[in-house]
Amino acid sequence: MYAQMVKTSGSGVKSRSEMGAQEQAFQARIDAGDKIEPRDWMPDEYRKTLIRQIGQHAHSEIVGQLPEGNWITRAPTLERKAILLAKVQDEAGHGLYLYCAAETLGVSRDELLTELHAGRMKYSSIFNYPTLNWADIGAVGWLVDGAAIVNQVALQRTSYGPYSRAMVRICKEESFHARQGFVIMMKMASGTPAQRAMAQDALDRLWYPSLMMFGPSDKDSVHSEQSMAWKIKVKSNDELRQKYVDQTIPQIEYLGLKCPDADIRWNGEKGGYDFSEPDWAEFYEVIKGNGPCNKERLGARVKAWDDGEWVRDGLMAHAQKKAAAKHAAAQEGSGNVE
Image (cartoon, rainbow, N blue to C red; front, side):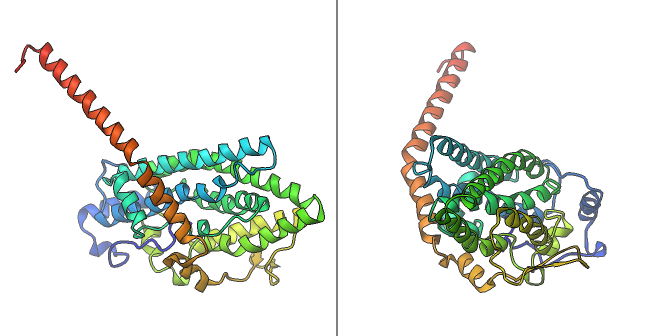
């Protein structure tokens, strides 16, 4: 979900004979399962690919606050408000962890946000769909964060150390997010006929967008091969999507709801479910900026950035004033007063 259409730099996977000595040593470390740290030598293409993926991941966490933040004041009980508020706050924290991880690669947070606001850096397609009612909040927690966990558990084994370590904490918090969503869906599915209908409708609308979160089919994911060779990605799009479907169908059955895919079937030979592909034409339209909420989501982020300019300016002025005072005190203490 965090490598949707992330373009890998370079012309493709190199053979060992095509690599220089440093590249060969680097790839040997990758193959041995070593973690690459910020001060280690790395190919420029590896660095650029990581910046794109971690940046997209960070943006997804920040933009992902918007569909749920709109429901904090409208949650049905005080307890639900507090839980949803904590969840949205967690997403902000996840974004901060990831921006910090990206900064270790030599890119600033401002640069990443400029790329987002200009539309040159994307975020997960799922956040361009609306949350129409309270059942959608349950479905987002259950389906969307459930998909995030499948992706992020794999990313704990990614080759770049700061990214890998950020995933450890994020996964623990995402487990809470998925659980709170599933609890909402249990309440709705066992409630009145109207509540049950809302739960089914939310599942119907978000099922295929959730499958799209893992990115295009492997046969169409032209940049995955290099990311897999570098172990930036450790599982392919289709592997992750299959795992997600296999764990989610029993949950749908437990809730007593109906999977929107009429062709879903257990395949004993492969030990997993056969399922219908999402509408990839829709996926590409959303990625291009033509989804139901693309303009609304990006507009909200740009507005928040512009509205916060005076705060950033004030903090920078204070920091500069404090640094100047510290420098003056040091000069005075050394007797070197001009």
